[in-house]
Image 1 (tube, one colour):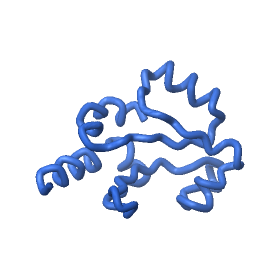
Image 2: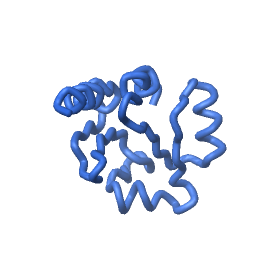
Image 3: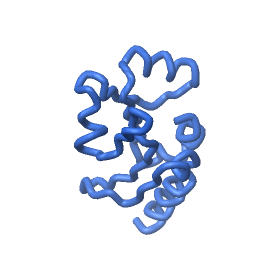
Length: 105
């Protein structure tokens, strides 16, 4: 999330960045405050991770947490780009995809 924050000015030109975490809203706020995260972080804590597990399908039984994944979702609701695992640590692919879409429009 810190790397997404670093690219926030580029992304927010025409994109809404939202984080999703299985932590409580209180833990998410403390993390955001500590790390300087300015975009919203939704909590999947209230539903025991049902969004992470059932909707996104990114729950890791090994780590008992959601895997790190970045999605670029178009205005039509379709997934345009995905970064998964270690690739998702550096959001360059998503940032570049946003820029490329901007150039096409």
